[in-house]
Image (cartoon, rainbow, N blue to C red):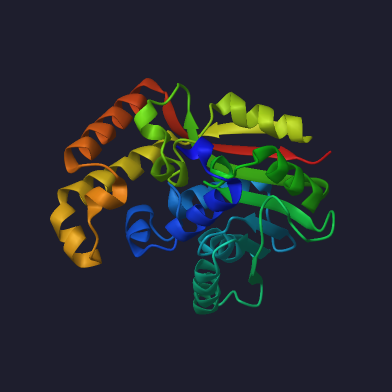
Amino acid sequence: MVDHMPPEDLKACCASFYESDLVRRFLGDSFHPGGEDITRALGVALGLDDGSLVLDVACGAGASSIALAQEFGCSAVGVDLSEENLERARGQAEKAGVDDRVQFLMMDAEELTFEDGGFDAVVSECALCTFPDKPAALSEALRMLRPGGRIGITDVVVERDLPERAQGILFHVACISGAMPARGYIDALVDAGFVDVVHEDHGEAITELLDRGERLLMGWGVVEKLYGVDLEAWLDLSQEEAKEMLAGARKWVESGDLSYGLFTGARP
């Protein structure tokens, strides 16, 4: 279970998980539900423009930083613990023509080494719920912001207790087992010192993710051959168990117990 894994091992596991090409097939280049549409909504909510300097925490392969730079003309610094993803991000930024405004560095979200108050905005997409020490990460985010600077988080929202089967490492790195109720994210931001905290519901992003999961299950054998993996071993689930969990997740979405949230707040 995740609770028994040392924090450093948990961070390393999360970083390596997102290096997988199979994860990229499932989640897309953005590594989070909703893709660029959610990132664009986040940029609008934060009021980004061509004068903004954004810190993208747990940036993965850099999709959010690049999308924000392209859409809003801002500059961005992405930090992550996976050098492989950072190298991929640098290549993607150059390909997108924004490498003069976007850079990527290896850094721990809970121990950022930038000076205080250097950023206009901090973003973190589908990552906060994977951090072993969420209060430390949010305190660091607050420290990074200039007075009046804003934070924007998108993450999975779960409004009920998860079954024991969904408490393992796979569900943690997939942003399920560490997810909180909407009130939990709001309280965590307020406790860290943020004000004017706002929550937007984007449940449609979870529905799209479940659609991708069902397509992956339909192509189970093809995916195994294409990626050279044993999906049952990789997922720690049989195909039938995976189908049952997806069906259960759809019921949770319909009942409002599983969703995707966009949360914003400001440093006083």
